[in-house]
Image (cartoon, rainbow over all chains, first blue to last red; front, side, top):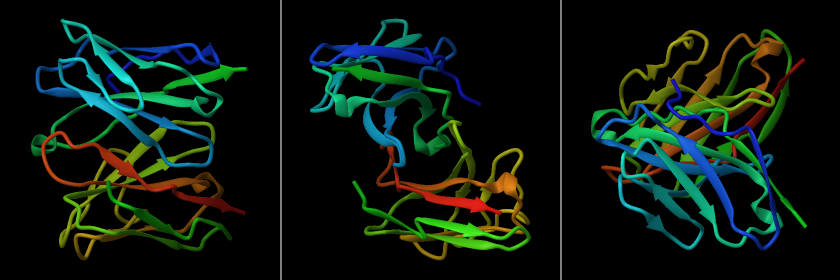
Length: 112
Length: 115
């Protein structure tokens, strides 16, 4: 079962930062937080993941709170192509069970 | 990351028939999974495809309805058996390359419609 809660939808102005929140209050110490997005008619695209430290890559930044009960995905300069459904997932590293359980996600609309 | 190819990309089938979906990866992977995405819904994990042994199914999915094979480290099939309109969905294959906390990577799925 999904262990995350996300707002169903958000809007963001083009060129501004998009901040997508995720609650995972029951996360365990060895569970990672993963973010994916799905653009219509495509498979989910991996964005970023982390355990407890903040992470940044060419696509986004991931901010995880100190208690690890929530996180925020930041798209620094949103473009129209960032319009998609964004999924936050928590899972244990594959050694002890690698299943992903998707929640309902956040539908992000980037507005011109 | 691995390149994942699914075939067919879409199909329209008659009720009562079966369809086998193929998932081919361009490199050896440690784990393979099959998901279903019903219209307007999120993804639901069907099963973990285990190399050389029976797949591990999630609650609500059974082998008779969704037989899965994984003969090697780069290939898996999912069969949707005795199809009904309720099976109209996108079926997606995903893989993990490596160990530890490596992410899953998804194919673009098979869009299946049952008449």
